[in-house]
Length: 186
Length: 365
Image 1: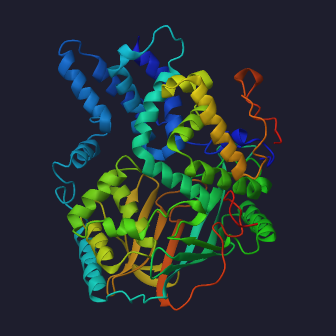
Image 2: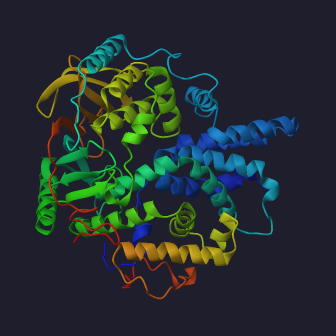
Image 3: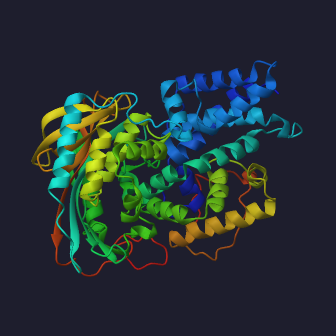
């Protein structure tokens, strides 16, 4: 495998994921992920088309050494919401800022409280853009385990935001679209 | 943003606007990878080295900072002191402040009493615009919080967080946006976050980042303290020295740092290269002190403002060194001014998350 090619294709994606979780140390995570990948290249299954889950798995281990920074970032979001410097939450219209702010604070509080393994599964799915299979490969656990971790994590998010927590647990297939534009009531 | 959107959709928008990796970082990471991959001979030894390197940071890529980081992490040699220290005038001021802090012992918080920390803080709010991605409208909001820390730190802490007010705006668009924002916020939450109450300071359902327990565990020897700070902040921020200084500023501004640790933090700051006096007569929230700071990346500078004659921490601030984010050079991007006193009682009432219900299953609106 040409590692330079692998790097060129995926470095920015790994960086983006790391940056959303821990901020500025993302440069190091990006670089280290590929160094570790190179060291472990024998463990990569060539029959798999997509190297992303494998790379995200390595990045997840490296990120776990930055728990304190991550905790600080989540707590900052909880305490100060979108008013906290450099934690903008992709707010589109100023009028919606207040609602978005409160929602994001609730969400951040729930994610901050979550066990690390649930948080990893959730963020790989939501931010890493991996499907269930991909998250399973990244974390080295069965797909069923991913499903239960994600269900638990999403239930906590819904409870935190005051939505009906007993809503049916549905796997959101990538085929059905990201549904970002389609608000879904609980 | 639609409030009724599902939780994953919302989560996908959180921190959606993080910066792309810099070209420098991309090139450096690529070079490090090629360097590790290239020589097929000497594979065995090379492999081991690359793996160790992967453990901390991209050595050689970040240069001196990386080597320093390695030394700090392996704890063979401490980083504090051997690369020089702060500018002599800044070091003198910090040393005087440390001596004064020890000399003027903190007021004692007796049983049933509280340490009251009044914080006047100003922070910048940046809102992205819909039609021009990447353009931000900025304004500054002020908040005045009062934190009551009980004599027994495990008892209930009380935190009063009233609504924010507009502090400073930058142009008509900014003024309009700031006014709308505060009006809307005040309409729904006239008292801001209101009164919070939590055992051992666990507000919003999570433990305090700066806690008395954590502070008690920090070394009082300045060299050891600074080395520990370098270890704790490794990889964060714009560089090891600026991040260590930011850590010191963050810790001091909590207002709960006891005099002996405050003195040690001043002395530790005096050991950080690049730290200098940035303003001899700095006015922070109406109080005059000496501003001591360090560049935190290419755009901003982090200052602490102290009174060297009493050893008191007046506050901290972040200053724009050059025009950026729609703000002129010299803009104070945010500051925290603290005043501490001992009081006999704390306000009654309060819940884990106050008036803003961000805690699941807890009291609140």
